[in-house]
Length: 121
Length: 451
Image 1 (cartoon, one colour):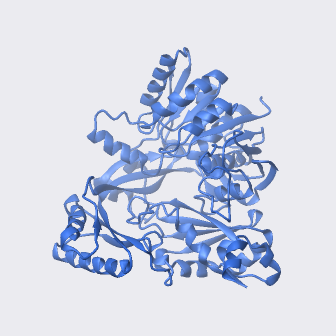
Image 2 (cartoon, one colour):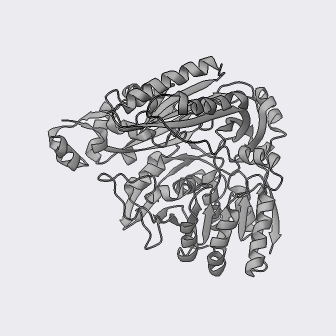
Image 3 (spheres, helix red, strand yellow):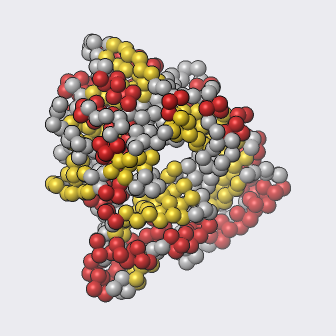
C-alpha cells in the first residue's frame, strides 16, 4: 500500500547559512528499512525540485532510526539573503511528509494517523 | 565533587519567552540556568544599530526583562547563571546585571564578562578563504561590518573557577554555554574528548530550549503533546561522566520523549558523526536514548573526537536591501486574479527599470513557503496573498517594490485587497560568511565585577 511519508515518519528541519538539514525519523523501528530503501538522496532532491539548488547528502543514523538529508542551496542564498517568507526554512521539512512510501500490508496497522488512512480508503 | 548537577535552559533565542525561564529559576532546583540569545546575524545587526543609535547598549535588548524575572529565584537558591546576552558589549551587560543585583539588594555577587570573540579589525589578516565559496576573505573588505569567533567553554569554566556567580559572554558556541558548568563541576580536562563529546551533545539538546520539550514538534493526530501553550524549558540532570537525564518542571506543558529528543539531536546538524564545535567534535551516531520516566529521557554514550585546530569565524557584511509587500485576493477565481496581478507586476518592474539580484512573486496560501517544491496538484485556495520581494543593491531600487504594489490599489484589477503602507517596506541585508582562524590567535579574556 502506498501512503504518504507522514504516516511512517516525522521530520524536522534546521538551518545553517544556505543549507537546510531535513531529518526524517521512523515512527517505528520496522519502518526504518523502508525509509532507507525508498527515500534515497536522489529521490529526495527530485521531490523538492528547484527548491534545492545544490547537492543533497544523506546520512544514516541507525541508532535513532533516522536519516539526515543535508540540502545545499535550499535557503535562497542564506537566511539573511533569502526572499522566502520562511527564510529559516523551518516549514521546509513538512514538504517531504507528502513523499509516497510503499508499505507492506503486514505493517499497515502500525501506520500513524490511521484516521486519515480510513478517510481515504 | 557533586554526584549530579541540574542545568536548566532560560532561552533559546533573543525573542524567546521569559516566563518558562522564571519557572525554571523558581521551581527547577537548578545549579545553573543558561541563556542562549544570539542568531547568526545578531552581532552584525547589533553593530549596525550601534552605529545609528548611540543609546543602544550593545547587549540583549531583553536583558532587563530576563534578569528581573530570574534573579530573585536564582539568588534565593544559589543558582549560577551563564548567558551569551553580552552580544557586542559583555562588560556593559555585566555592569547592568550588577545594577539589578544592587537594586534587588544582593551584595557581593561576582559577575564575569567573557571578551575576545570580536575580531572585526583583525579578521582580514587572520583568515584566508570564505568557507561557502572559496573566495579570499579580503574580498569582503569594503562591506565588512563585524567579525566574531565562536569561542568555546574554557573561558566560562575559568570564570566559574574564579568564583563568578554569573558569567555573561559575547559569541560563544551555543552548546558550550551548557557544557561549561559540567567542565567546571566535574573537573573535565579540556582535551578529554570522550567526556566533552557527551557533555556537548547534551548542550546541543538543551540549546534550543523548548524544542526538546515539545516545541516545534506538535502535529495534531500524529504527534500530540499536552498543553502546547504552556511549555517548560528543559533541565538536564548531569552525572560526572556527562550522562544526563532530560526533564522539566512539574506542571508545565509539552513532553520529553524519544521523538522530541531525536528531532532535536539532529537539529542544525550536518554529518551526525562529526558535529564540529570549538571544544570537541561530537559523534551522535553512538548515542543511547532511554525513556526512564514520564517526561524523563536518559541520554548516554554520545561520542567525542579531538577538537579542531581552528575556530569558526562569522563575518557579517552589508549586501544591499530587500523590498517587500503584499496584497490579497479571495473568493471564486482568486488564483486567476493573482496570476494576472503577477503578470502586471512583472511588466511594471520592467517599465520602472527595477534592478534586482533576485525577485520573488509568490501566492501565499499556495506556494510562498515551499516554492518550487509545491506539488503540481495542490488545490486552489479560497484566499491568496500575493507577496512580492526583491533583493537589490540600493535602497532606491528596493523602494520600487512597495511603490509598484501601491499602484495595484486603483490601477490593478478587480477585487484587489490592499493595505495602506504603515511601515518601511525595505530593510538592509546583512550577509553572513564563514571562515576559520587558528585558535591560538584568538585568546579570550575575562573581567570581573561585583555587586
